[in-house]
Image 1 (cartoon, rainbow, N blue to C red):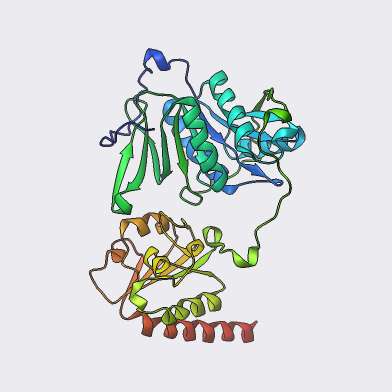
Image 2 (cartoon, helix red, strand yellow):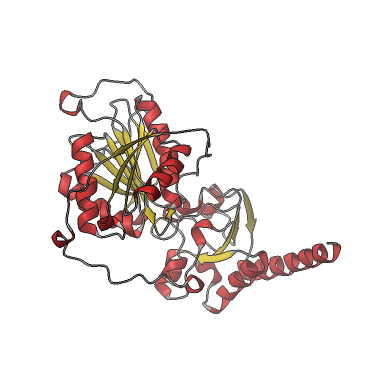
Length: 362
């Protein structure tokens, strides 16, 4: 429930005073997603982004941690502080050991209503998306999903940019009349900040005030995903991807071969998922996976906005396309004009030979 999009305003920090009705809403919060003994990396990425927003507003960054064990939550809070959080709100209760929408929504909305943040950010994970929608609805505030850029305009409003119209346009959305301003951001969209082990943040403990009998859903057990069947694109250092320029499902094997030689992951553009050439977990782009590898090789991919926002964080983008006017050449670091069906096998052979020489030399 966000206000209508408007053109992005200047991002200069003029430190305007908040309207009277928002005067008690301050600070930038990040929901720190903690499950099965670890913080999801997207939460640390968001703390880094929150630090930039908070510095422009002249306020603090706060992490929000919900879980079943106070010692675990305090340890996670210490990690969040090292990445930029000034303070951390913790609700530790056995009811929160496993994620369930009802108690997590109650916990987070109660914290918001008590301490009144100006901005609340969550990762666009399976958990984060489920929780963000419930919290925004309960608080009757705006929520901008799957953002690719966050900024503060000259009216102290969060300018949340995301693709729209199927990824063909970017729009900037402002939630002007409600607080907190909420947004979700997908993993790897924002850069991971540097940790500072010397940073120590404050901790505020808050009670849940809920009984197990109040909750409709029950956790019967936990089954982990089979890692062997799940693509690890988001955090791969090398990714090779293919598009419609490969012309057939059989030719996509050329992408897999190169990725295997380089020790990387493989993926593809959205049309390949629609055609059934690859599974949805290997789709790269705004509606698929956002990646930030050291090397990204795109073969036969046109490079529309939807794909661009999912890959432009890569350190090195190498584009192979037979069309010299393809959009991907506008943002690739290196471009090869040619038929991917011919170039991919040549690259695979060249890397195989180079790696063989290195092994012999070693």
